[in-house]
Structures are given as structure tokens and as C-alpha cells.
Amino acid sequence: MKKVNFDEYANNYNKILQEQHKLFGNIEYYGEYKIKIMRKILQYQEYINILEYGCGTGRNLKYLKKYFPASNLYAIDISKESMNIAKRENPFTKILTIDEFNKMSDFFDLIFIAGVFHHIEPSSREEVVKNLQFVLRYSGKIVVFEHNPYNFLTRKMVRECEFDQDAILLTKKELIKLFKILGFKPIYSRYCLFFPPRLKFLSFLENFLGWLPLGGQYFVVFKKSW
Image 1 (cartoon, rainbow, N blue to C red):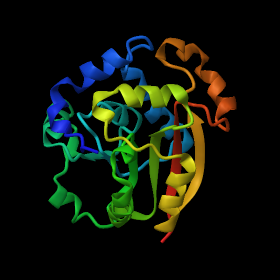
Image 2 (image 1 turned 90 degrees about the vertical axis):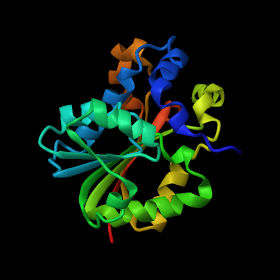
Image 3 (image 1 turned 180 degrees about the vertical axis):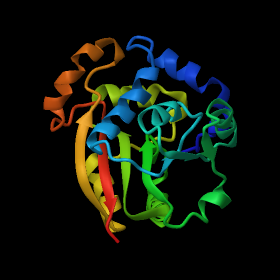
């Protein structure tokens, strides 16, 4: 399977994504939706240093700034072109190089990761989690959002998306197992995104549906335990 080069999509990423989601509504909804969930689940605690791992073009960063206004924001991505856009459009965020990231031992209080692990080859996922463990402070938290492979519409959209051609979806159970092996304790998990932007007026129902493995995505909150 050929690895997707996100540098090739950086300038048109949002346009391509919006075109794919045009029947469901504005894609800006998804970024704020995730950050709002994270803010609520973390019980409005304050975090000094927050990292978005796999920030892409920075679509989520303005919402991290909105809901965590007192925090220092950092971001990193493997796509240099995407990081250039993220840096230009989010001057309040420190965009990290790989070398800078690798030196930040026990630095971050909170790490946010959305839609990243399905792009990482299964054989490389443990190494990524080890790197996250290295930069996260003891008792720090990681919040991971991922596509739910049990949702048929999610599978269809991933299959048809040109920059998801290397995607290998993983279940919530698989994600939890991966992190537990490397010293993380799962403290909260739910299925989410049962309703698209056009039906966001029904989103209050998700408070009762989080146990149901049919949402478009799921999320897990992990705590570093050693």
C-alpha cells in the first residue's frame, strides 16, 4: 500500500474534505465538536502546555485556542507543507520540528490527537506511542479521536477519500490495548459523531448514545501512569 504524501494535498486539503462532506454540512463543525467534547470531559481543568500531534493544516488549532485560552499551544505534523499553512494561519501556536519535539521530555500536560493513528502503519504505532510517552508529563493526559470501523458510512467515506488510501482503521479496543501496553491508563471512552453538521440540533442525544458502537468516530482519554 502506497503511503499518502500529505504535502501533495496541503493546499487543497480543506477543499477536498468539504467536497466529500458537502451533503453533511460545513467541515468546520468537526474541529470545534471534538475540542468541545475534550474541554467538557476534562472537567474544565487548565493545562499549561498542550500539543496537537498530527495537526495537518491547523484546522483544530483555533478551537484549542478558544477553549483553552490560557494554555501554551504547540503542534507538529509529518507534512512540512501542512505545517507551513498551520504556522501562517495560527501565529499563536508554536509549530515544532521533529528535532524540537524529540527533546521535549516530560513537557506536555495534554496531547490532542484526531484522525492520525489510522494513517500510521500498525508496525509503527507502538513507536509513536513511546514518543508520546516521552514528551508527556507524569499524570498527563492524551485524548485520541479515531474513525469507527463499525460505522458503514465512515468506512465508505474513508474508502472514497483520496488521502485516506493508506488508512488502516482500528477499533476502540485495539487503540486501548496499544496504549495500555506502553503504560497508559484509559480513564474515559465513548463513541461519538452520531449526527453530521446538518443535524447538529440532535447532538444532545449523544449524551445517551456514547455506549453504542455505531457513531462515526470514538474517543479515548488516556492518563500516563508510569
